[in-house]
Length: 208
Picture 1: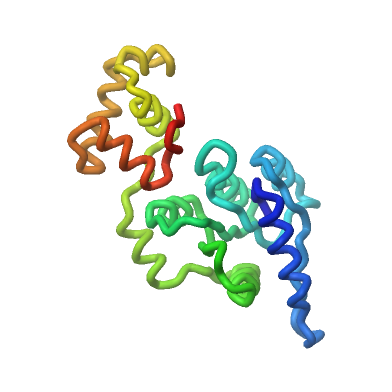
Picture 2: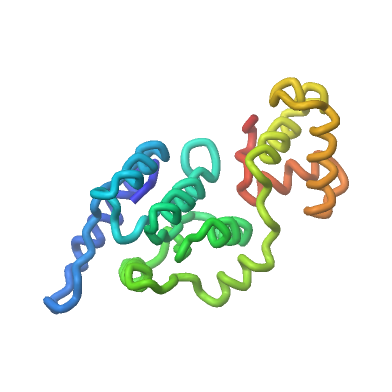
């Protein structure tokens, strides 16, 4: 489990323990390890002896949607992942799907849903509902890391020259990023782009 809120991790782990199967033929679910920080989770995933059957990760960790980094690392390690979130944002579903996640669960889901999703994914299946898949496919593609940095600085009112200086790129490159983002998301102003990015969870309000 990867979650920067220890109370959430403890609650889920406790719920899993409380749902021990009576049937000895049904495998119980154990939490192999829990990480609060992305680097800790990545280190565990790089250790073959520490690799779990399934990774459950919050999608919004630390300074943004860093849980996607965990999803990518899990995919590269050959471990399926299920993304947990408190938000119903189709763009986050698409991002998780594109990174190779095998499931998407809301944190308010019943324990039985968690158990079913973990077992299904551990057995090679997926835990995306048809509605989630439709939403993910139709959602706007999230910006790249560099594009997110540009948007975050735009949110703070930085000019093209200031953004270029901050990121070590030319102002022409900054404007190229902005034009592509306008075209991709159908926005007509920098303010509208920043509002969209916050609404979709690509950047945090006030980040930059």
